[in-house]
Image 1 (cartoon, rainbow, N blue to C red):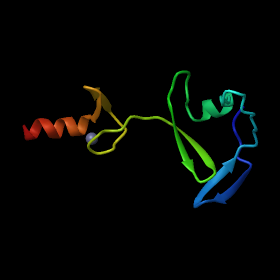
Image 2 (spheres, rainbow, N blue to C red):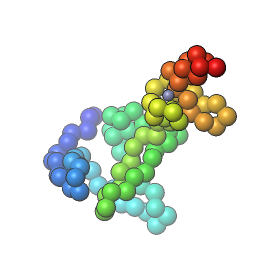
Image 3 (cartoon, helix red, strand yellow):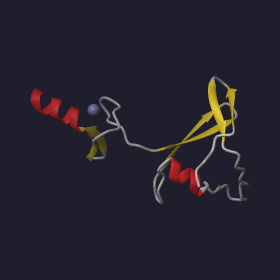
Image 4 (cartoon, protein in one colour):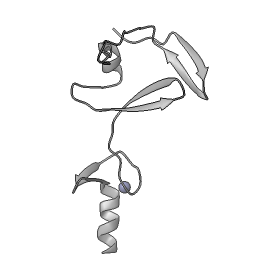
Length: 96
Ligand SMILES: [Zn+2]
């Protein structure tokens, strides 16, 4: 089963697309992300989501660590708790 976008609203400068699914928040705050949405967005168990707030909206985005130098999220490795991409590592090597 795939997720179909039902309507598009323009709110606060961004387009938001309803997928026609509603979930209730339980007393401690958790909500369940529909499996169709997790599959569509390639969100696996134990993946981290980053939470953004835009006026009265909550935006969830799959967390992808970015390079501390260039903000690139591809080919990033962690070194001493800092994320660095391979391009920046190569550039650093050439400048040492
Ligand atoms: Zn980089």
